[in-house]
Length: 356
Image (cartoon, rainbow, N blue to C red):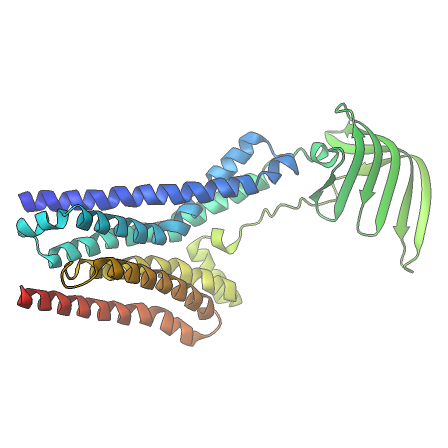
């Protein structure tokens, strides 16, 4: 009974620290993303409510990005805590062997692996797709974004507008409109709403346009209307590969053989598998005692090795979409490395038992 309580306590501590690290890293990255995406409000006139919904839907994707490193950090935090507080000695005195601790850590890692699979394959792509739909269906206050004074405003593709003065009532002065082959300069202008569409009425200006012969043709005007509707918004509204349903992703790859799609497929399947591998590596820190071996050096060494493996697997993941050989290495290396780690752990534990 006491052994079970200790095991439950350790499980709870690992889960708590994992959730804390995961939440902290997610919050840091998410806030950074939110700050970087503020241009959606300032440059495109996206409403604050829509922006809030959009960045909220980015959270699952951010969580999936930090799940593996969060597990590594949280596991190290717990092992260091157990060793520094002499808590492991209580486990040994209660009759809990190192094999049992390793089995418990590995079992916990399998649970988080399953959770990572769910996020990578289902939750993150679905949430990303929904966030893209929020942007696609949003009503952008493009006119307000386009006529901000003393600023080069470019929320629309192939169009930049500079306004020298704006009285915030729709009356503008010194307007410069830059298109692909055309420049419009107007002394005055104002925003009009005609049939629920916004236009710029330009007064007393000149149009400089490049013709087919690559010559500049200039035409003066007293009044003209400028229509925004022919321009596309700069914001990407179609789903990216990372936001595509897994079955559709596979179906799309079978048809197009797109390398980026293949990378995305391998990423969703493979990355969660790093969690149990990291768990086994971290178990090496349970080996030895302070008299025989420097545990701090082991901890640093294992942490570095774990980090390098994560980086190496990311490199192999990128290469796997280029050559099929790297696909075999991508999945073969962790399996063989995991078997090696498991074998070494058993040997170390057996040698400790004999020397005890």
